[in-house]
Amino acid sequence: MANVNLSLLPWQEEVHNNPARFKVIAAGRRCGKTHYAAVTLLLAALDGKPGGVMYVGPTQGLARDLMWDKLFELAGEIIVSSNVNNLEIVLAGGGKIALKGSDRPDTLRGYSLKHLVLDEFAFHKDGVFDTILRPALADRKGTAIFISTPEGRNQFYDVYMNGESGKTGWASWHLTSFDNPLLDPEEIANAKETMPGWMFRQEFQASFDAKGSEFFNPEEFQYYEKKPNIAGDYYIAVDLAGFESDRGNKTKRRDNSAMAIVYVTDEGTWCVEDIQYGRWSLDETAEKIFKAVEKYKPQSVGIEKGIGQQAVMSPLNDLMRRTHRVFRIDLLSHGNQKKQDRILWALQGRFEHQKIKLKKADWNITLVDEASAFPSQLVHDDLLDALAYIDQMAILPYDWGGDITDDYNPVDAIAGY
Image (spheres, one colour):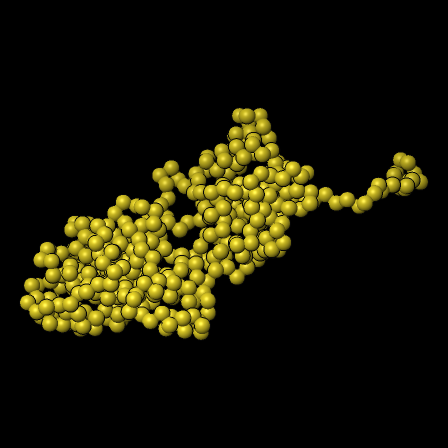
């Protein structure tokens, strides 16, 4: 058999030697991800084991443009046949490599795969891997590599976080264009001078948060350890999402319910004591609201008006009856405002003028994450939304600087005027 040069860069060797079954590579431009993908395809096709080998791009046209010539460049001498119409290559020894596009899901059915590469996965059609390609790996216990430059927080971010969180069988790597020693650093520096900052961070530094927020600067957020000893009142605002059933809804990107607990001082500063959030059942939601009221004894509780509020009132009323404790509930409204406008109106100026302070806690990370990406549709804004509702509830006392004497005397004491 002819010799084939399948040399790897240091980062590629590290990834290749890792035993994880599912490998996720968030990579900047020109760091060598397509070369590594081609090498894994060839090695899998040449291993002599039964099962298919597949490369999937966002579209079949892109799959051809990205990988067809690369495979011929690396393995031209051992390619015994090829079909440019259906994009299949047969290697010496009988191994096959098929090139497909996620935009045509039906063409991906019926395969039994031992190795799969999903290139530019951030731009794939949603759900294709979970519903079609993951089952195709089952009988062979096949391996998969997800490679892409990020495009915000979409399905590629989800699989990347599988590896980051230590999920069994998964591993993730974050690589920038600087990780390719063959790429001239001066060329990268020149690109940085001419490209928008967010674009450079996304394309060369593989940042999932490249664009950042146009409205909030989390680096300027204020924090505290202990609530200040200043007169004020607690308020609790609840933003409800759909409720989990007893069996659980496994939809990945569904909104969370969120409950903001804020101490508003008489000076107008919001001290955010806690923000609880999650995908709760109806009973869980009522319990969390009731426990928060019991702990903080707020001036009032606000719940977003709608179907969710109507549903949660029944278990809340049951809890009140059983415990003989009743608290005030205000119905909150978006006031015909778009969510983005309502959040900005309530929060942007306050954050800029340090009128919102956050108690240091685990939920800070999620709130900062939402603020960093706002108003991206790829990132939840549930915590921001709940916090913004406090604006409808907090009523500040006003001091007129002295006593106001009412010297009005009615002419008719009975009529009152």
